[in-house]
Length: 384
Image (cartoon, rainbow, N blue to C red; front, side, top):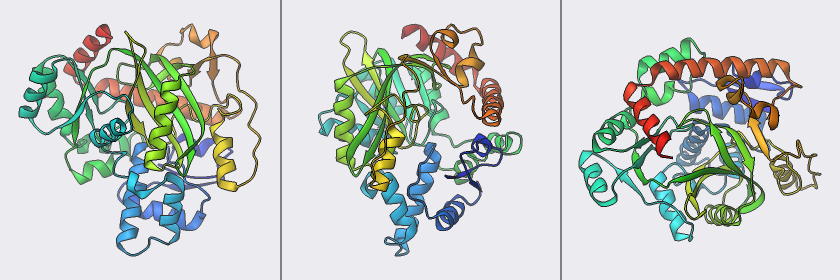
């Protein structure tokens, strides 16, 4: 296994990775192209949305220059699925429309361009409403708002590109260049309004190959780092409606590789509403929970064409605490004792690097989050 990441990324601290190619925020396409050309990968597994976006952009660049049949395009298509899906997975409203065409339950979603669109939406659908920016992840581009004033403030903030000062700080102090490219492009984000569905959050991780689901994991989110942050504690569930939704989307988009899907289980009915797709590996993808629930083994079998025995279950417990977020957020959390704590004990350097990175990001986001966002998030938390 080889990896491409920013310098000092935790992936460089694991013994599993034999070679690292460094991500260059000022020349992302070139570093991805060079890494693919040198490594000649069997499959590419993006670990965040920016990596997926760069791969899609690289594919388009190569195609325009007649490289569709070359190593780069074939590797990307083999790893992610049909090129027709590339634009859809980044456009929340278009993705929701596609889901509804497939008979998948999904909340009403529409693109919001300006304050007039917001006023029309509020007059028709009311509040609360969820505003989401395309091309963002980890809750950074999501706001739950309860008044028109909050919605207008959130729209302006979500549409704006990352501040150069913020990108520079992350690059120079944290050695994280992920925001450099979006900041330099200076394009405004597309923002979507989505009807608020009161209920419990859930998530699915899937391994798929050429439009067929190979293995799936479903979890209910028990605890999050913050209202808009990543899950810190999850519980494995079986949910036929979530399984059916995932299968329909994977087939319709002809997806390959590892993907995640976010849902909300409606409080009154238990119905599963599909919220979005994450076209990448998610933080639960690696968990091996038996036959049909071992995503790495299933994908490896499809890529190699050989039988691969699923790994032993990492735990018999259904509740799983995700490292390092819960431990850093609440060192006295009862989940650290009662559930399976997913800590990479066998990789002490990786463990230490994950903790250091999580602490830095937690401190940075806490300092940089405006007061009005904290206030609206607190209101949203009470209403859930």
